[in-house]
Image (tube, rainbow, N blue to C red; front, side, top):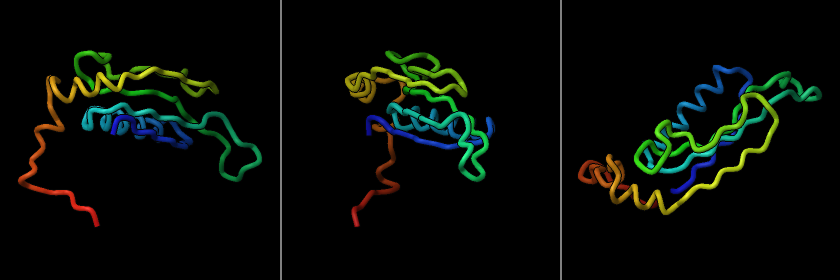
Length: 117
């Protein structure tokens, strides 16, 4: 996987924080980009959708050649806007070969295996 897309709908900043931090962890663990996109504002004609909280972001692995904080791009919190970010898939390939931490290479294949049903 090169890019994981995470659409979400949260009504509080607490809910948003869970989505954000879990998504950033997935970018680090899986050595991939993660783009989160949420809905901000309100939907007045939809029951139980009085308010929503969101901030769209693009996360990267935390390693050389990537931003040190693991954030490639971020929108203004709780503001209706479009976020555009260029990502370099070749940097992921380089990370998989020469990164400081080799999550994908260091998997314990002797402990588990994936099989297709």
